[in-house]
Image (cartoon, rainbow, N blue to C red; front, top):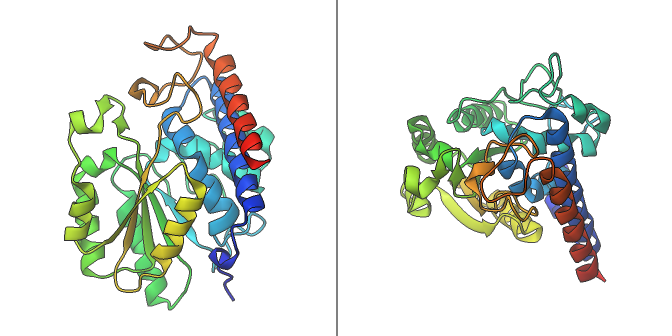
Amino acid sequence: MIVDNLDIELTEDKLFDLQEKAVKSRELVIETLLEAKSGHSAGPLGMADIFVALYFHILNHDPKDPHKPDRDRLILSNGHICPIRYVVMAMAGYFPIEELKTLRKINSRLQGHPHRTALDGVETTSGPLGEGLSQSIGYALAAKLDHKNHYIYCITSDGEHQEGNTWEAIMFAGKNKINNLTVIIDRNNIQIDGFTEDIMPLEPLREKYEAFGWHVLEVDGNNIRTFVDAVREAKAIFNKPTVIIAHTIPGKGVSFMENNYLWHGAPPDVGEVSGSPAKGEQGKIALADLRTLQGKIESEHQ
């Protein structure tokens, strides 16, 4: 029998534990990128709260049995933010945390974009943007045909909503009322070349989804309780798919990275980034900022 973790109360102590884990995951992202000297910074830091909430409170999953048939499926469409997925999976027990040091190295299981056959617990290979929602719909339809009750979650970027394939999938899911699917959009407003609304405006994003028959929720994606409440509401909708537009801060927790699109695809201490500390200082300052964030969370909990 599937146990719905959302039936478990999110107490203040549990929330504090999740918040602490989110900060720890951000520290590990920075340390992992420093080791790799390659990879994306802004998106992984911005999505830490959501990944921690998913793996430590929402998903029905088992790191010791990553292929169990009744597991929830988490599809990462925007595969370039995989450092945060790898970090949280390691924290959850899918593989040793020490293995994070192999990110993007030859023969590593932790490639720069996730590879389905390389790492247990990764459902799809991702990299080319705009494919994840279509893949998620396939998983959701298969579950329905097999009369299974597991749930499908798809994480997408806002930038990949500039891809036509994404909108074909949105129309298809709405028409077919695929109600065992929740899409989570990382609405951080940046992409590699600038701000989304400058490159190719997406607004009114909410109204577009509603026009195609979706239930739409908008939340602060860096507020764990608000996000968990939204997922709970999404699972209570029985006649349509749900999208959660999660407004996140790219580079969350690191002062010089926050809301700076130049950190979309840049790791710390590899080069000079306009408006940021000098190369060689970026990693140290980032980790110091995150320790300050940890202290703030602790003081608020007391």
